[in-house]
Length: 75
Image (tube, rainbow, N blue to C red; front, side):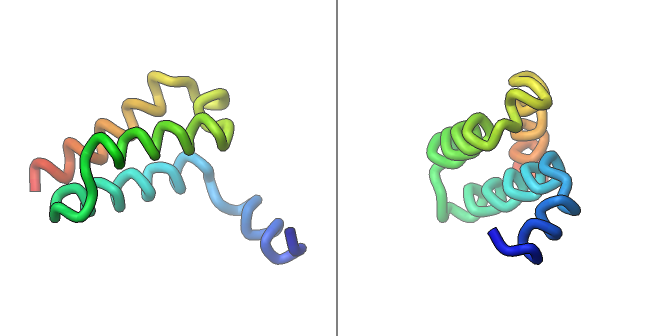
């Protein structure tokens, strides 16, 4: 990883980045470009692989995903 990439990585809040990814996936599901189960499964796998689940816990991870997909359904 380059020094610039490392610098940017330290400035990005992993929870906020995950939240943004969840919201983006929810939009894709909403317009029919992605299957709900596929979207959620990939987000869960990525959260576990990146260590986010270990950092904030499974419940908090699921709450972030649920909030993104619930907000998109309400639109």
